[in-house]
Length: 113
Image 1 (cartoon, helix red, strand yellow):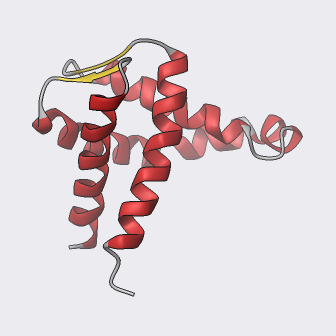
Image 2: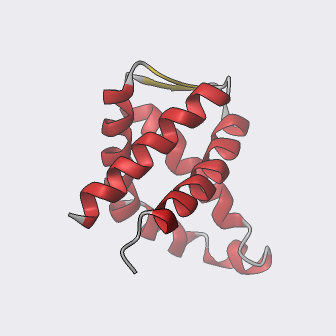
């Protein structure tokens, strides 16, 4: 049940952010649900590999390079999805930062603790 709630929180957050940011586009709300699933799968499979490969630069930048990895994950979602368009790395970077913040806030509001 928690997984479904997290997917819905991510989908709603992405949908709202796409209405605010002019560089991120989704066809409809269904595509944001697909985005949440694809992002979850990529975070599970690809992100650990990227984190290990970029560990030296992440240490040098005191963890700030992980923001770049988040943007790369958004661009990978854009690559795999026809119903999503990101206008460039800058928009992916901004979108990933805001998506992290908004999902954390929504997650805190809807947690059962």
